[in-house]
Length: 637
Image (cartoon, rainbow, N blue to C red):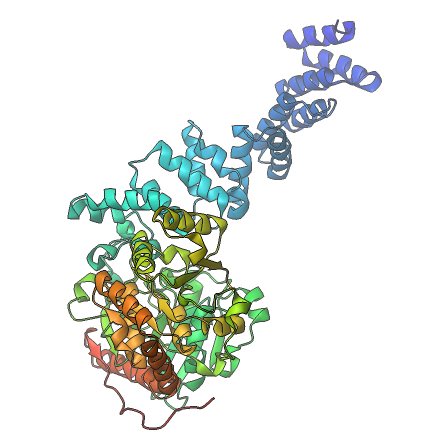
């Protein structure tokens, strides 16, 4: 039975005699506080317009019980949100959510506040609950948190929920496919790709426009289609170009080159390729400036510093407009974006009038959508004749390979023994250490065909997650191949990685996204790489690298030829030995690892671009002439 005083206070509240109710409740709380008394006090204070005090009363009401009363916490939460007291709302919502992870309002509050603060990693924790909600505001907030982060399990669950709810929505379909590829979930990903391929050409173009450009090149080998990936917001860049190219610009005797990237630290794949080029630039002809938006934590542990390579301007905390102003202040002639559609990109800066010439190179293997660029740097393999209509940029083709390499910073340790890396001594070892997202169902089925035709062989694969290993093993087991013929491993430190590569016989490249840095690593380690001739930039890179090292015979015309060549090499170990010896002989003669030669070609490309711009000519195809071949090694080990 309720306390007579409480009943009296309740009656006064109902009569809207709030002051009288407040006097009674204050006395009750002084002598015998309980949850209902604090709750009624909250009701009275709220009715009197004392919302902040009401919220505290509801919180105190909840704390009179163990566990805290969820109804009273919810009332407090509602008022904290109304008052925009985010810290109090956050703490209250966490208490509710921890007791009940299905509580949608608590999940929404947490997700909303963390998103508002830009703490997306924390926001994504609560997005899966919201993605299954029937309330539009919940679903929409879950969608806002998405960022194509395949390693985030909460985002993966949100995307799966969204796809199940709206399987025909092209955004969720493309995102779901992205996560399936990351997990090597071939059964589901193949079904989605097959369904995509049944569409008309126009429908395919409309659907792929919802895809992430970096994702699309992993699964779609059609160069005409991938041009439109992410193109939903595309507006013609002609106005940008007209405005930029018609700005007054003072050219100097030295060309001023600017590099824009967040990858200026030693452990990043890009720096493994390009650091020697930065150090080799001719400072009598070029002034080099690095516009660096690399995280400070990466710079702090980097073994390579740009400070000896030119001017360094930290732009990490600048707005796009501030960065553009800094580039203009440096009077940069040619701005080179090293990121494109890769993680951490700030390519949108190039939609501002930064320099007379804007260039894409190295970071992204394809055309860059929605960005004002004049040229893309490639070579005749990755950018062949006939491909120009599928690019927004004009081609600038280097004479041998578009990919630089930095041999001075690449360790070449002695080979690791097979026993130490878990491989059999008496088997032929095929290897692929490319990222799991690059292993398409097509290429895995081709590897299975190779294994069936080479009974005394094993396949050595690097995986990044249990899901990747599980799904690869499932498909291989279903084919009838014994799982003991598959040797799984994980990423390793660079020196050990180079040592263990030498234990294999032949590398099998992926498709439609080749190994890029990983292919040059294998060739540097003396390991032959077999690839299929590609149909877009990302699938042609290994062909470029093999030609630059003198092993063009390892480029197969199609998958049947790829399988036949793998079997032929398995059956002829002397041919494998000859290829390995050829790699050792060519390592310091052929162009692939010749950083100085590459730099001279790159600098000629810049001069040819600048010459056209100085004369008021529009960007057009540039084919850089090759220097005479080397007759002596460019370095020794």
